[in-house]
Amino acid sequence: MSKKICSILSFCLCLFCGIVAYGQDNGAYGSFSPYSIYGIGNIAKEGTAYNRSMGGVGIANRNRRFINILNPASVTARDSLSFMADFGLSESNTVYRQNMGGNRLVSANNTFNIHDFVISFPIYKSSAFMIGITPFSDVGYEFSSDVTDGSIIGNTGNITYSNYGEGSIYQVFAGGAATFWRRFSVGAQLIYYFGSLDKVYDMNYYDSSFRSVNNGYNLLLRGVTGKFGVQYEQPLGNNLTLTAGATYRLRTNVKGEVTDYSYATTSETTDTLRNNVTALGNVNHLRFGDELGVGVALRSGEDWSVEVDYLMSDWRSSGMDVTDGFAARGSSVFTASVSHSVRAGFEIVPNRNDIRYYLKRCAYRAGAYYDTSYYLFDGNKVNSFGITLGVTLPVFRLYNGISLGVDFGQRGSMRNNMVRERYVSFAVGFNIHDLWFIKHRYD
Image (cartoon, rainbow, N blue to C red; front, side, top):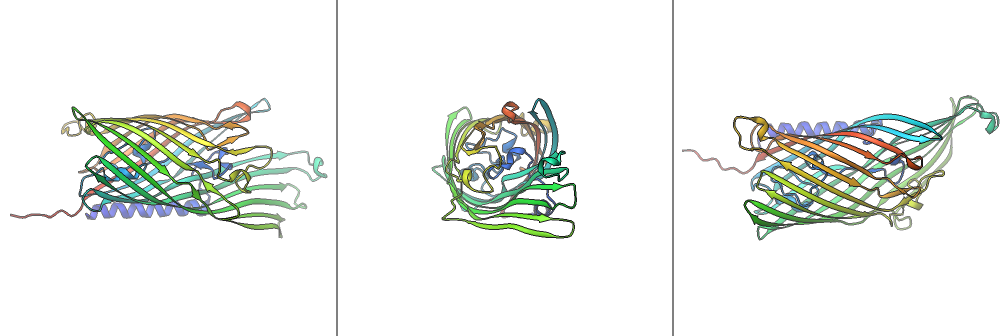
């Protein structure tokens, strides 16, 4: 592997470690949404910047210039000597609106975080391997309310009730695949989930003679599961190829512990009112839902491709409805459900070998998606939809490039006191490519 590639990988790894450390120590949010108060928060959007700029498709995708992490079977779509890596960042800008008691509430927030770090290389002939890390879910919210008439609670004066949460669950994965009869590819992936989530609700008195109360849950979670994928390519003539793909991720039994705590504090003392630790395991069942995905793609060489995917994930037996720290508090009702996703994407390259016009060598993408949440909020689905645009700018030689993507979308609605989120998200991916095991010859 060349010194240039080693330098780039070292920089990406250092940046990744720095951003993760910042998020753990300084309260940076992986995402920010009032809906992340439920369950394990917002399920992160899968895929690299390449996938996300095409509406999130990838189940039937076989592009040898990019690592496709959505289907482990696709890792064999590569040049036989290729070493590949992908490092991605994401940034999101969201405006929140809600109708509450005849008043329209408006707020906004921005987040920035690491999204993925993946490497892939061949193993033997028509087989290959990949390993990486990417977020699985994120918790991020903060809101408060004031009670200005303290006489309601024994003349205590003004009180502020605040809720906030943060944390992420990451997935580390390693997978391999092999191609048989030049058309049929089979892949498998081992996934390890880990992370911590904090959900806090405080009651603070303006009068310092009263003790403020700090309550919350700290969730330490881990689990192991597997994902399987297949792809089949069928030539149609005139350089056209039809590819069908499918994936299945197993249901995950989650281990770890839930700490339910409560502290009463003044400016001088802190008293523990409650500190209960409950282990998750054989007695308290908690599960991540399984996921089934199918997709079909039509490709014309390396000129253009179009793909449509469908995914379904069943969370009804997750146990989150009745587990402290995951179920909603107060009057809201949280119900684990079945999520669905429909995605479509398109890519075109005007002239990959053009030597005069740089922009003709770029890959341009567009896509759209419609998702339903893995839970019901007071009996209502929290749906999201959007359109995506993207481009990959070739850099240096081989398949090196920088992928840029933008996502214009909406989540939720303002009906039934719900919150509507309208967002513009950006994704940047660094696609790194090199050739291994080249035997140089000299005259």
